[in-house]
Image (cartoon, rainbow, N blue to C red):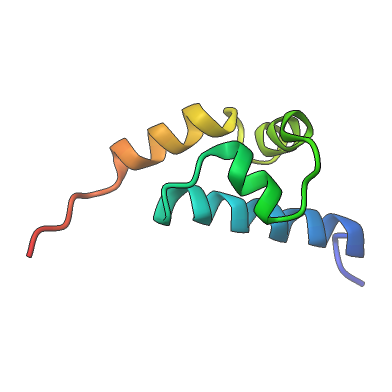
Length: 72
């Protein structure tokens, strides 16, 4: 048995993909929510905060500040 239901697994995958879009493609939270299948940006924001802690804007900003800058 797994620790998550299929619905929980799908939600986690969607939230992780939205997070990736915001980090790597610099998509805003509303667009990321729509691209992964959320109809309501506010619901996405609540579920994102439940999963990752801070709401999308603060969380992504924090992650971008903490990531090392790569130079060529």
